[in-house]
Image 1: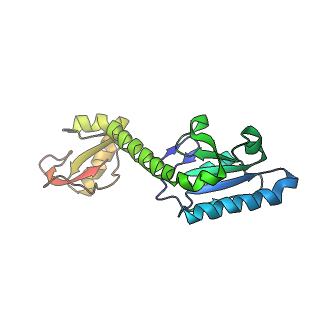
Image 2: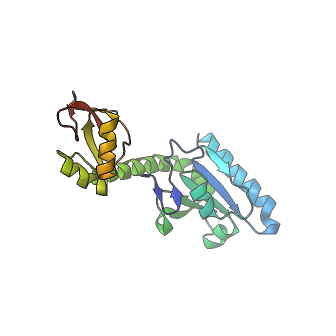
Image 3: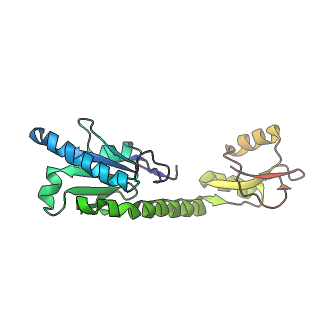
Amino acid sequence: MVHGDDQGLILPPRLAPHQVVIVPIFKTDEEGGCLRAAKKIREQLVKAEIRVKVDEREGQSPVSSLTTGKCAASLAYGDRARRTSPKASVVLARRDRPGKEGKSFVSRTVLPGRAAMLIEIQKALFDRALAFRGRTHSRPKNFDEFRQAVEVGFAQSYWCGDSKCEEQIKEATKATLRCIPIEQPSGTGSCISAANLEGDCYLW
């Protein structure tokens, strides 16, 4: 998938069920206060019209919540953040930037103002997907080029619509139909396999 990495799915903010997941990190004797603070942060973000969830499951790490929580970013709140940066109480982690690059310390008071970050993530993922499409999609002019294209990526080609023709293409190249592009070229074109027949454009 375009929106994914070795750690799992990366959902764009507009699609994510929860745009932000808050992960409380605490020692046993800090649990009550930490959870109350996490819920206050949630209230602040909800007022800023951000979809937020507090992950109260036991034994979950911030990394686990970020990669399995179907979110665009996660916030780790707790004693570790306060000790690492006394002026900041929250570790902010962006799902689209793995490792240290996507993590930063921020103050709870400025979190609602960071809503613009979700727009940045949305655009970054869109630009990444567009670049991926440019690298992996091609428009072969003949069947030989088609065969080479589907070995390394995707091919956008005309197809006559005949099931037997589709099966022949599959047997010869192992390529399968993926989708019908919404934006179609004007008119039909010669089938990539049966040149004497015409059809719409498909993605293989």
